[in-house]
Image (cartoon, rainbow, N blue to C red; front, side):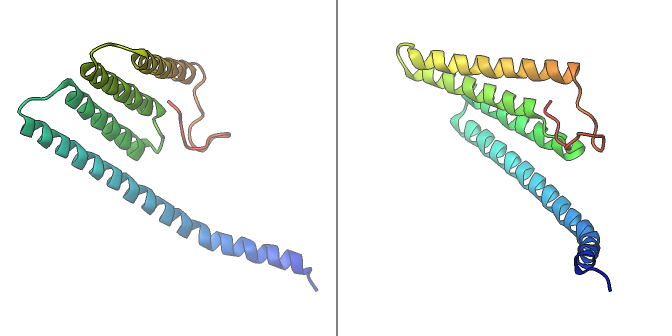
Length: 157
């Protein structure tokens, strides 16, 4: 008679062989649905921001920077859709643009410049240095393509 542990392991292997393709299909469907939802929400938000800008009669620099943020998010979704790689640099670009937008709004509201502007400028500089480091390291030490040893499917460039 065969060992029960061996039979359990064999049954587990069979169940996994049946479940894995179904799980991959569900994961891919969720991935695509999520990307379409994020893309649609980005277009909707950009359209609403553009409509509000039209209602005001003239765009401010903050409005234009907000549209650039939506453009970067849309580009990031498009790249992730095509390549299945998360472009972290685009997230940093969004952060830099958002900090710049916040800093401009803060300077326009305040009569004098204070310590918060230095903090925002320092945070922007840190993100810019992070972009520089990521670009340098991704060019100097390229990550293996998906399917090679050590690849997780998520690139950080």
